[in-house]
Length: 161
Image 1 (spheres, rainbow, N blue to C red):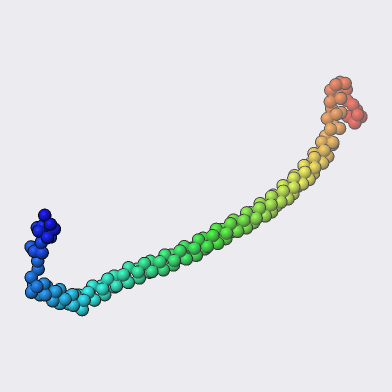
Image 2: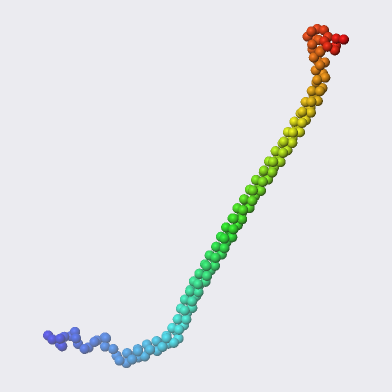
């Protein structure tokens, strides 16, 4: 057996043997379909894809811009909030100082009033003591003589005469 007699290498290709007329008609129809697709359909598809990409990219850029703006606004808000906290701390500190001054002034005023009341009370007590001593000194002699007279049993001093 030789290779030439073999059925495997026979030139008859069977179902793969194309008809040339169908092959030419298929190539022409493929060319027409390709031209129609290339001239009419593909540019519309390409334009739609580009618009979508632009919308996506533009949306991403707008989102990035909005994110940057939001970050800037947040930083500004935080700065204002920090300034407000500092201002509140200053106000509290000032109020504490003013309160301390007011308390010290009230304490000093209260001490002054207390000292004035004590001085007035001491003077009044001294004046009443002096008046009571005067009243009692006159009566003390009379009571002493009367008491001595009771103890002794006879008049003593000025009552004797």
